[in-house]
Image (cartoon, rainbow, N blue to C red; front, top):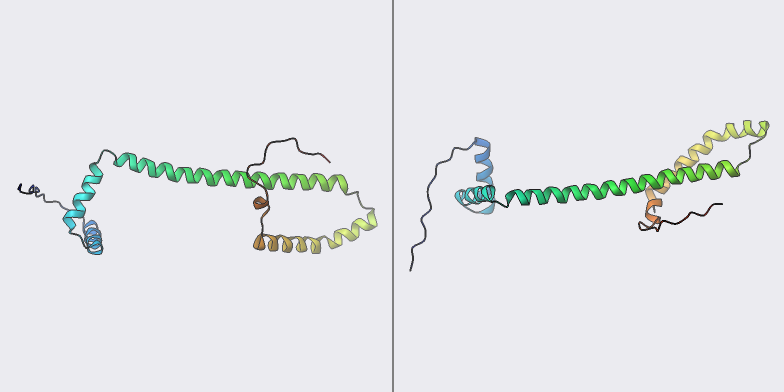
Length: 145
């Protein structure tokens, strides 16, 4: 039977905070501090440590990229919705005669407050417009009215 390899001893000076963190981690894991320090040094010196770190960064960047793509999509939907509404409203709403225009201006504040309240209810209750629009819409010629 072969004798187990004897490990080399090394003295290391650690900052007080690092020592406290190492000690607390070892206590939580119920492992000797030397075993944790050895694993940490081996991981740090491992040739694939950089690759693992790079893979983690790439994963996070991909998540950020997907979130930005969703934001761009939602912003595009919002802008197109507003532009379509304004175009539709301008083409279908005739100008009011002056006496009616004065009355409409007088009611504008109340109507705007009602609009904001309805928008608030829609945002709180859902579903959101962006959820109603499929993400994989085929590019086709829009219908013009």
